[in-house]
Length: 341
Ligand code: PEP
Ligand code: MN
Image 1 (cartoon, protein in one colour):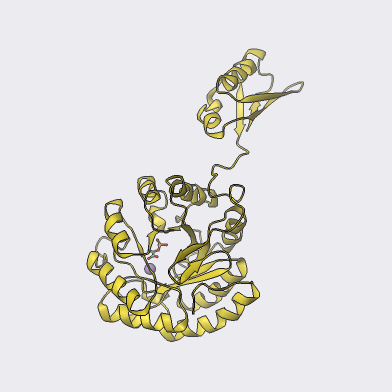
Image 2 (cartoon, rainbow, N blue to C red):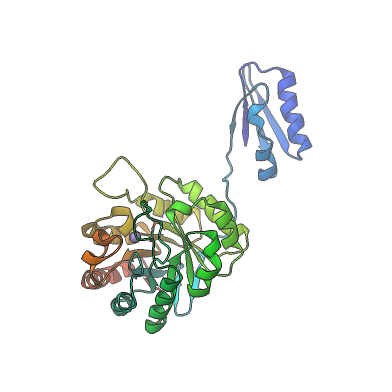
């Protein structure tokens, strides 16, 4: 950390900062110019940041050169984290394709989707039972009944299942039925929930918030790892920008940046990012090229009648075509589908 003092800050003001730092057990290295003094600080990051030196007399600016995350960083663990679930895995070259409807609607819908996506090569099944809907009048999901249908469909085809925990009060019941617990974009900074999921022994799929920076996403993941749960998968699902043609703006640079910053697997969700069926395939391929470790894609047996997100859902046939196009592209990137055949 660097503490930049105001022009002509007094000796006492500089000394006061130095004293505070040494009381906190940090080293202060002064570089004194004619007008300005800059203090370089070395020591425990959490303690130094908690001093809040910005407010002291004579301090102009505090520059934090250290990253606000530790456990999720490549410095802490250089090799890729691989999340394993039965025959499926993600990370370290294993590419996950998580496919299924936006929301669980019926037994037939889930079974038909599960069979179709499994046949096409998906490695995990998704479906929402607790839905975060903008309007309180929109379909809110089937709840626990939906969780059971998802579990049954996953078991019927032998795929692990992923579903969202919308509220920390549902974490236990969702964990009872699901293999991976999803934290939705709207909950990325629900710190109480992240703390709770950190104590659980199920992998967490953490989606980037609608207006969250890369650093905020990594800091959210840090909460889960700090709690002891090391199996976190990050998901770029589009961010809010001025563009309205697409539902959100898919930030593929974030996928590549995250891959170098963190050892955690990073997936891309072109469905929620674009909101448009015609853009799913090109953005899925671009995600592979950007270095993603997986994709989340909404698939519905009858998108026109979907209760949620029909316009961005692929038909099983379109999903099958996309999978055929993806497999050779994975090989180019040195990856393979994360499922034992
Ligand atoms: C979802 O994946 O079902 C979902 C609601 O996504 P997001 O939280 O990214 O909007
Ligand atoms: Mn959806």
